[in-house]
Image (cartoon, rainbow, N blue to C red; front, side, top):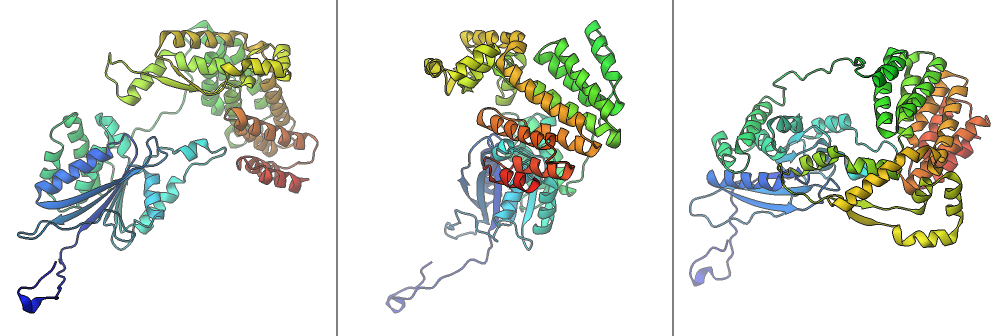
Length: 507
């Protein structure tokens, strides 16, 4: 501030610096987690305690293409002092408290230099919410949670973490209430617990927020130690059949090695829902053939993993399957739960579709489908009905259309799409059964995980898988190490160069 009185002081400027240090906090929260609500609570806590609080939000994008970052600076009020000018943006190396609602966000804060070993307390939930890049990766694009935990323990002066998502879900609220409890319990702000409690004492869900706050407070105060013993899931056992259909299928599952029962059982359930009993029996027949081939190593790992990928591939998502999933009653319940709609409250559901001529051809009998794909005139005639579009599945006519499309699954076995998928499935299974060693068979079976996505992604992954199988069939590739290398290269992404290079090296 400017100091000086009278003419003698003219032109003299004295800067008086406050000796009071601000407390700088960074909060990273995902869309829908109440990051703004948490910030408002902290503002109220600071105001009630006689402190200044300056806040800025750096908006991200909801649904985890990015988190919203909230920056807060706290400073005690000095009697008679002017309003301080506090910072609007966080600075690397100057954050006292970093709070993240999910562990991958903690990793992002560390990588951006906001967590310092000499001053930063890092509070984080250690659950995962997978990001768009993780979900859309062709291979395993998930962040390594254990690595982030080790990194946080190394770079934070103090690191407190526990599963806040599980905690708040048990109390029927959102994660903001748990984060407030963690902040209060960690003692990182010089405010009384009662002040925090008063901030959340009113408003919607106050009792649930208070319960989540109290448990989170205790967890943070104890350094993140669990206050209860989590339930250990019981070992899987086959259920007792209650219908003739169940008896027929479960008896065949029971004949397989015990270590594969869980995967095979869930595969049977999926395929019954997808098609019919005969389709489930086809699955069991092929699994039984692999079990005979399996040496039994690693708890019949070959049979277990082949069954896993086979069940997923046999339930490939064509138009009837997508329609079936869109119009089932459980989907409405899931949507209502996700958006928090009250019972009886009307909701509007918009579904995004992008039908292509290939999907239409896949629905037709094989001969007709092939003729459609070969006809330029037929392709042009279908163009008005194809391409990206949005449909309201909360409308009666759209729901009726979805049910009609779902009913086409009864004719699935005679379609071009079914013939195409099963030609590839049979080629893959034949390679597994023909492998000279159990290790090679297991590596080929793992290649079944390459099949994913739809459209260009599915064409790319399946065509590369077929190329790998061709290399094995012609004996240009004879060992599991080479197959594994080709598998990894094939899943590297859109660029074909890594896969082509791996193919050249294997020959």
